[in-house]
Image (cartoon, rainbow, N blue to C red):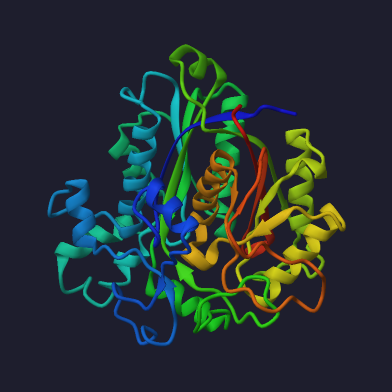
Amino acid sequence: MNQGVAITGMGIISAIGNTVEENFTALTNNKVGISTIDNIVTIHSDSIKVGEIKKTNEALVAELGLPADNNFSRTAMLGAIAAKQAVKNAGITDINEYKTGLISSTSVGGMDMTERYYYEYFKNSSILKYVESHDGGDSSQKIADTLGITGIVSTISTACSSAANAIMLGARLIKAGKLDRVIVGGTDALAKFTINGFKTLMILSDTDNTPFDNERKGLNLGEAAAYLVLESDEVVRKEGKKVLAYVSGYGNANDAYHQTASSENGDGAFLAMQKAMKVAGLGVDDIDYINAHGTATPNNDLSEGRAIIRMFGNKAPDFSSTKPFTGHTLAAAAAIEAVYSVLSLQNNVIFPNLNFKTPMSEFDLLPQTSLKHKPIQHVLSNSFGFGGNCSTLIFSKSE
């Protein structure tokens, strides 16, 4: 087995908690974060459910101590909060002591603010400041500035696999000796643009989402941010760091099937899992838990399920989707699920796939529907995005 790149810190804010500890408590006590929309004025507020963080932008500004005339988007503020937690958790006091970078990811970027003032830009010059915060790179730079990072800053936007690719790139930069330490993850806020877009695609559910259920109706959108601190073996040895887990495997593939759908046989998902297993040097019997992408859309769950069967045959490991807790947080999804994967390793626990009732007619796969305790050495986490971008990460125990 390839030991991998060390994870030494984690931070997260989601609909089920403002810290890593709060998220773990929610996951182990079936405390879901799916609700109606409070922070956005939309005609869909009563017709769909989302995983919303119940903090206003004003509360986030106060938490970060930002000046009144700031132009932080909600995406940037959520990301800054989670990234600061991760750096603190890693015990870092001098962020630039080693070659340090930030690989962040987002889909929404700053559109939550630019859409809010769309009709006012030609009337009110004071809000023009939000235009320059629209693109995804702006949120990454603001997070880097908040942390004081002066090294490499990069942004990845590959839809719902974005954060997985950020983690993969960070691990590869450390393995290549380009960086000693890198903060990796993703952040996305809810926005009317995304709500309306997914509504148009007709894949939003008006009830709680039900991954891998035969009667699944679609996803609940969510918002969240999570970041991991990755460090080289040399830094870990020199600083005597506690290692939370390792990023031992990663793979990315594109099934080139459809702009917003995965191939029915899960070609991209299968290839991504296969590549990750090869990088980790693991066999199918070594995986103890799959944190599935599991969006509860008709297409994803069929495609992912078939890919799991292709990969593991009739011996598929325990698997579940945690999206019934948080909603689908788009670019942040792989990052929050990376945190959940590490928590699974640390606590030898498999989180439940909530709301499941009826097995899918196409195959016999059954998700884990209740909290399960068992020894866990390796967790495989899937994340699949629009454009056919499929990514898989493998996390392994640190001891």
